[in-house]
Image (cartoon, rainbow, N blue to C red; front, side):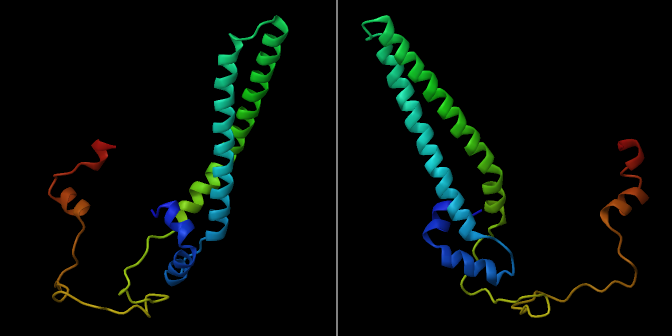
Length: 154
């Protein structure tokens, strides 16, 4: 997974990589959503700092009216912070989905092919083994040799 800072700083490279891999990813939406989430997080942090400052000022209040006003202000800030937290939580699933849809970058020397027929074979190692019988997978071999008992394991 690519770092969001890299995506924000290099959107054209990321878009080109998405196109080269023949994938679909809305990079612009991801960057916009990241900016919105960053703004909401900053708002939450500022409100939390205000709440902490407000709580410390309760002891310095001289009258009951001042104390009641400070407490009311604190409750309002807590409600605002909770509302922003809900907004952030609502944005997170879309952000996570978009982040997961961004492919890793390819090496510069990677040939680009839009489908399997257009892909270039760069190198092969040995020839594929040709059997004069139908090869079995590991599950079938284990079953025939009585090494694996799928019925008892289920």
